[in-house]
Length: 67
Image (cartoon, rainbow, N blue to C red; front, side, top):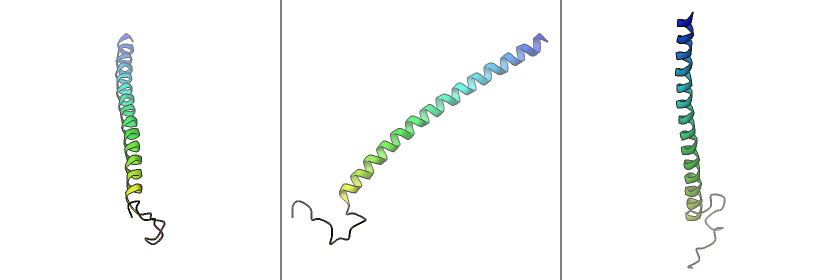
Protein backbone atom coordinates (compact mmCIF):
# COMPACT_ATOMS: atom_id res chain seq x y z
CA UNK A 1 0.00 0.00 0.00
CA UNK A 2 2.75 2.43 0.91
CA UNK A 3 4.50 1.68 -2.38
CA UNK A 4 1.35 2.68 -4.28
CA UNK A 5 1.11 5.93 -2.34
CA UNK A 6 4.76 6.70 -3.06
CA UNK A 7 4.19 5.98 -6.77
CA UNK A 8 1.15 8.25 -6.81
CA UNK A 9 3.10 11.02 -5.07
CA UNK A 10 5.87 10.72 -7.68
CA UNK A 11 3.35 10.89 -10.51
CA UNK A 12 1.73 13.91 -8.91
CA UNK A 13 5.08 15.69 -8.59
CA UNK A 14 5.92 14.93 -12.24
CA UNK A 15 2.53 16.26 -13.33
CA UNK A 16 3.00 19.41 -11.27
CA UNK A 17 6.39 19.95 -12.91
CA UNK A 18 4.92 19.40 -16.38
CA UNK A 19 2.05 21.78 -15.66
CA UNK A 20 4.51 24.46 -14.52
CA UNK A 21 6.61 24.01 -17.67
CA UNK A 22 3.49 24.29 -19.83
CA UNK A 23 2.38 27.39 -17.94
CA UNK A 24 5.79 29.00 -18.49
CA UNK A 25 5.60 28.18 -22.19
CA UNK A 26 2.09 29.62 -22.54
CA UNK A 27 3.16 32.78 -20.71
CA UNK A 28 6.20 33.22 -22.98
CA UNK A 29 4.09 32.68 -26.08
CA UNK A 30 1.48 35.18 -24.90
CA UNK A 31 4.21 37.79 -24.39
CA UNK A 32 5.63 37.04 -27.86
CA UNK A 33 2.16 37.34 -29.42
CA UNK A 34 1.60 40.69 -27.68
CA UNK A 35 4.94 41.96 -28.97
CA UNK A 36 4.22 40.76 -32.50
CA UNK A 37 0.77 42.37 -32.45
CA UNK A 38 2.30 45.70 -31.41
CA UNK A 39 4.93 45.44 -34.14
CA UNK A 40 2.29 44.56 -36.71
CA UNK A 41 0.23 47.55 -35.66
CA UNK A 42 3.24 49.85 -36.05
CA UNK A 43 4.07 48.41 -39.46
CA UNK A 44 0.46 48.74 -40.56
CA UNK A 45 0.46 52.40 -39.49
CA UNK A 46 3.73 53.05 -41.32
CA UNK A 47 2.37 51.44 -44.48
CA UNK A 48 -0.81 53.47 -44.20
CA UNK A 49 1.22 56.65 -44.06
CA UNK A 50 3.46 55.63 -46.96
CA UNK A 51 1.00 54.32 -49.51
CA UNK A 52 -2.06 55.76 -51.18
CA UNK A 53 -5.41 54.91 -49.73
CA UNK A 54 -7.07 51.72 -50.89
CA UNK A 55 -10.43 53.48 -50.58
CA UNK A 56 -9.67 56.44 -52.82
CA UNK A 57 -8.63 56.62 -56.43
CA UNK A 58 -5.34 58.29 -57.37
CA UNK A 59 -7.25 61.44 -58.44
CA UNK A 60 -8.94 61.74 -55.05
CA UNK A 61 -5.70 61.45 -53.10
CA UNK A 62 -4.29 64.67 -51.73
CA UNK A 63 -0.92 65.60 -53.21
CA UNK A 64 2.09 65.31 -50.93
CA UNK A 65 2.92 68.48 -48.94
CA UNK A 66 5.93 69.36 -51.09
CA UNK A 67 3.76 70.01 -54.23
